[in-house]
Length: 124
Image (cartoon, rainbow, N blue to C red):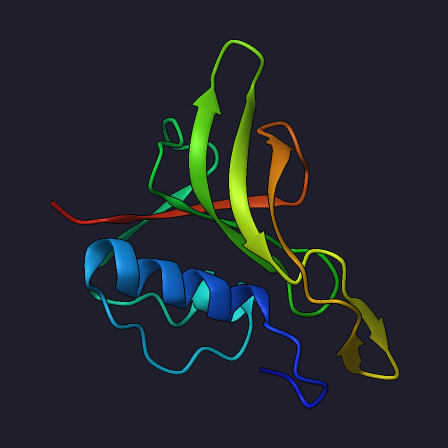
């Protein structure tokens, strides 16, 4: 949680991974570092130009300084969209601190988003 009690997006993903896959992910500073520098060893990194996203993947975007992440729950390759379970989707960065409701929702995203960096996939 941030200092305002808001569930960060990375915390949502960490909780979902623990519940659905039994994988405990350690400290994560932010979504961008999670994808680029702090990839857990149980996962493979896929950049968006490398194959297709799948249900169960963890998607990452490079919005602002910290980025955003969510757990992929459905994929429609025909329309080039997918849905993610995401936490802190409605927060705002104010003076370097995330504030807002920190809501959790299912959101629809585009595979064509210029901010989509890629996804992590649990190794088989």
